[in-house]
Length: 261
Image (tube, rainbow, N blue to C red; front, top):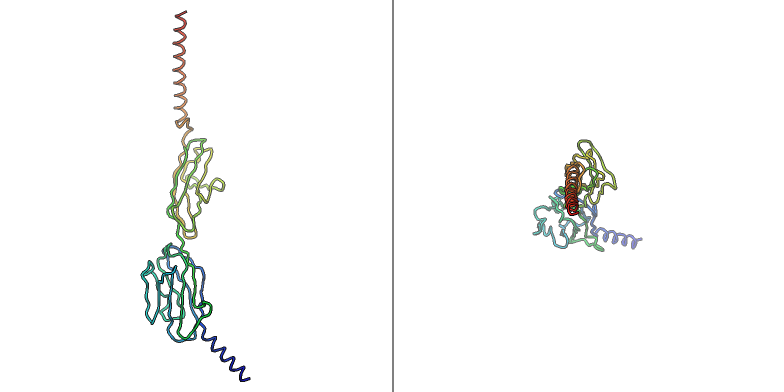
């Protein structure tokens, strides 16, 4: 009985000497420009001050050693810090004004003099993804907007994470929404076929992702029918003029032939 009690006591003492890390969320996200918290804490029976090291893609970014906080010389230097005053069991950090380049894996390592860790349990890993709203898209018309013709409207945002999807609508003079296959949410193209003057108006493209929304608009003015790139009345006038010229030449040649006979 004494041996069993002693064994339990030793086991209990060994367990209390183990240090364990805990991560609130393995993956966190933030919209560019906002603040984000990387949640990590540890459990320890020791009352001694911990050694804390935060690392981002290998370089150290923040440390707490011998009671001193040190922020390393990186792009995060003026935007990072501990959420709670250290020493504290909660070793979470904040990042202000997050940027897309801040995306990646962050590792926090804690060591306490009297405690030991097994199988790397003194390390907490957090993956950060910084989302970027779509930049202002560009709206363009490709093709000649005349009655009976076909055109394509394009819409493209130079940047955005994740890649934005696009949606077209006509807002004036009357509202109209478009569905696939006339519009492609991936490429941002809108196809309009067999144009009529009633299709003239203001068209708005919305670029959207999980981080935000951005828009552009363009005015479509459908003109009268074209003939080889010119208005119909001009084409008919030119056709009549050409044929009138040929008829005059034919008449002159006939008269010359008659005189010779």
